[in-house]
Image (tube, rainbow, N blue to C red; front, side, top):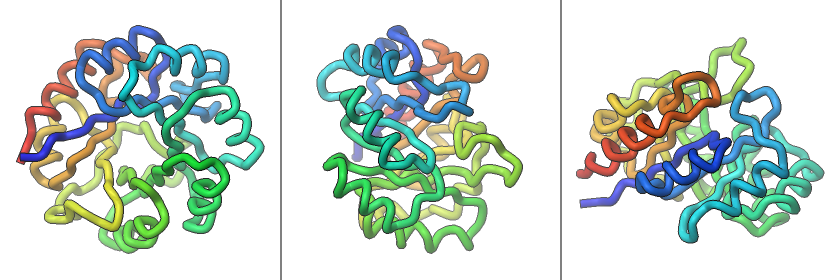
Length: 217
């Protein structure tokens, strides 16, 4: 019997933080990407981070961020992990780990079996992986699009060289099935607990977390 860990990403209010914590989430994510409806400014993120209860992992989602941008984020906001959600190379992942001394989670987009080898590649350098649905070629956002991929691609692959997290199109209604099909021990949700882009819903967060935590091997 393995405990499932839940990450609620794209939080933008004190109520979001409180709901995620009370529901039993392990990670809370803040988005630093202006094109996203979940984007937060430094001052807002710093205030929110200060509300996160001890023991919850505070994650900053960035997209192809430069050192200057990461310097500004880490200087302004107390964080526990950096999430790289762009086209960062394995070398860039290693650079970020070395420069900031924080665990790094690298997002990997998956559409079909041809995308799986990069999971092995990045698992050698990242502290965690976020395996997400690959966005459409014309998508404005690299994630948070509410899309899922064929979870059967991950069946039986509980472990790579580092821990991994399942994302992409997860909702309160399908997260238990996704966990059963993939063996994922960690799941991430953003749009799946929203009533509108960037607007988290407390009841959906509670339902999602409850369903995930109940879905054990």
